[in-house]
Image 1 (cartoon, rainbow, N blue to C red):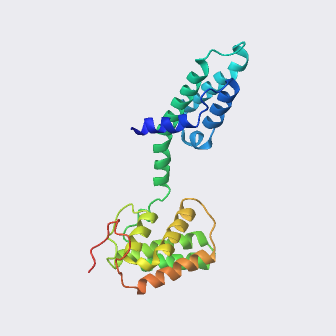
Image 2 (cartoon, rainbow, N blue to C red):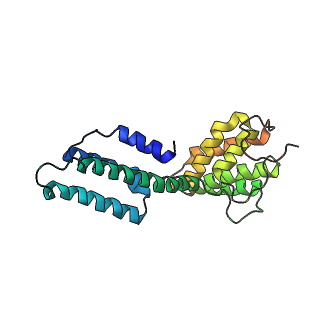
Image 3 (cartoon, rainbow, N blue to C red):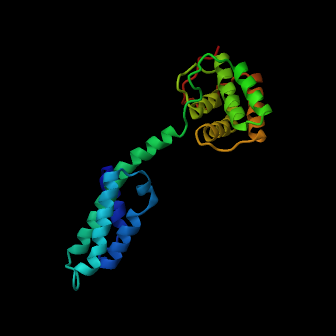
Length: 228
C-alpha cells in the first residue's frame, strides 16, 4: 500500500459513512482549518482551500431540499484529496524549517582560537551583554574541540551537529551539550534572552570538557575526527 492510499484509508476511516450536509461541511472546515496546514502552505494552496471552504459555505442556501445521494460522498472524497495534497506540500516545508532551526556556529571567522572566544565571552559578560557572552562561550567549546582534534574542522557546522558529535566523544555530557546547543540557537538565531546563569553553565561545561579525555562511547551516527 502506498503512502497516499494508506493516508486516504486512515482519513476515510474517520469519516461517517453517510454524512448529511451540515456534518460534512463542519468536518471539512474543521480539518482544513488546522494550523499545521495554514502555517506552511504556499499561496496557491491557501487560495484553493479558501475557494473550497467558500463553496462549502454556499451549499447551505444553493441546494433546495435533500441533496442527491451522490453529493456528500463526493464532497467527502474531495476533502480527502485536498488533505492529501496539503500534507504532501506542507511536510517538506516543515522539514526544511526544522533543518534550518539550528544554524552555523561560526560566522566568517575561521581562524579564531578557543582562547580568543573565551576572552570575548568574558568581556561581554563583564559589560552585562549576556547574549554575546553565551554565543562566544559556546563557540569556545566547539573551537576547543577542534583545536584538540576531537572534532574535525567543518565549515557550516550547526550547533545541533556540534553537540551530537561532542556527545559521541564525551558520552557523559550529552544532556548538557544538547542544552547548550539549544541555548546557542535560541540566543543567536531566536533572539531569546539570556543571563549570567546561562553564561556560567556554558563556562562550566567548557572547563569540564577541557579536562576530559574523549571516550568515544556515545552515539556513533555522526562524523568525528579519528582519535589520536
